[in-house]
Length: 201
Image (tube, rainbow, N blue to C red; front, side, top):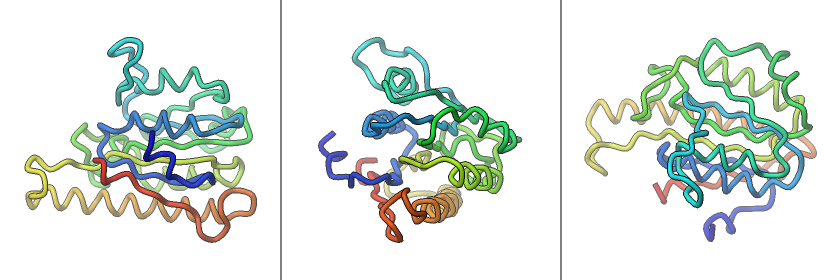
């Protein structure tokens, strides 16, 4: 929580690191103080009651978020092919959206996480989010799903290739956020905030 207090008040994109830290999304979302929809891109629903009251985990953080009074609903995109933009927009019963992306939902040739891979094409996800951001105001976004090498600090050749794929996906999502945040009334003008908590991972 102390680290989150250092984030700017404006909507921002946060890279969380490994999917083990996806539970931090709950704390980021609890910064939002207006009606919004959570768009969750994840192979898993992360809605399990794994540990009981008082515990926050990567597999159960959405359960906590559902109790946040400003949340108006959750749209879960778990696998491809993705639904069309009109169908998704019809489910967004609020003027603002928060997007949480776990790259384990992306195809194996575009990302690798250690939690398996999904079937969503990155290009399709970018296209859909671009349409959503043109119709709904983004109030925040986070991305997780980085690969943790088996030997910390010494990735194998295969692990380095996976890390490179992940970074290409990250850069594409970053470019999308910057375009969205540069629109009037969304973020801090032409210099959107993009902090990172990767150091904690």
